Amino acid sequence: MDNVDVLSFLFMLGSLDLGQDYSTDSLTATQLQMLDDLNDFGIVYRTSSKSTRFYPTRLATTLTSDAAALNNTDSFSSALNSTSTSGTKGYIIIETNYRLYAYTSSELQIAVLALFTELETRFPNLVSGKLTKESVQRAIGLGITSDQIISYLDTYAHPQMQRKNPVLPPTVVDQIRLWQIEGDRMRATEGFLFKDFKDWDEFRDLKEYAGHIGVLVWSNDARRLMFLTRVEQISQYIKNRQKRV
Image (tube, rainbow, N blue to C red; front, side, top):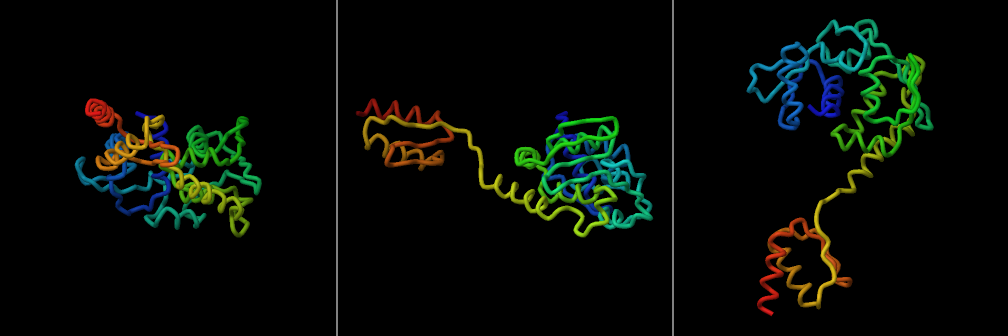
């Protein structure tokens, strides 16, 4: 199993609502494999191994905290707001300069933080690091959303921060969301850059053919450049064209 995929799924489970059913359609192969084990452990419930829906149980909400299982069936977020029933202990302090301090020795909590934080220093009961554009976008690339990161930081904020309103610095919340938006604007596409065409006719013919078969991603007529996702059919087309010419 992919360790990052496993931690990402556990992180997601901890933020789901108790009693709510969720689809398995968006889960990876690793996460689908985990569901069977989690069902055996009582962390999730499925009506059958072939079911396309699953339900987080009370145990699911304690996966990323040291808290005991919840004593009611209210949603996870509602239960966390009630300190008398959840017993959740906050351990994260985050400053307006994006520096983060986590008072924990839990390997799981530290691993979860490492998904979206650049951890720098570790002591027996404290780790420190910083939220950066790279660390947040890395987490987003793993399928973790900015809202999930914000929700996690808010849920497990240190009591010192819980006394504030809002709990998290607005600048930090806004920046996390902006980093996701910025990342969403860019999409990496694997492919091949074609250049150095003999003449305009060769460039035009190849561009038209690439567009016709759906492999053309980008082109620049002035510089006679084009970016294609596949090369097999294009190579054969070029050979056939050269024979005709």
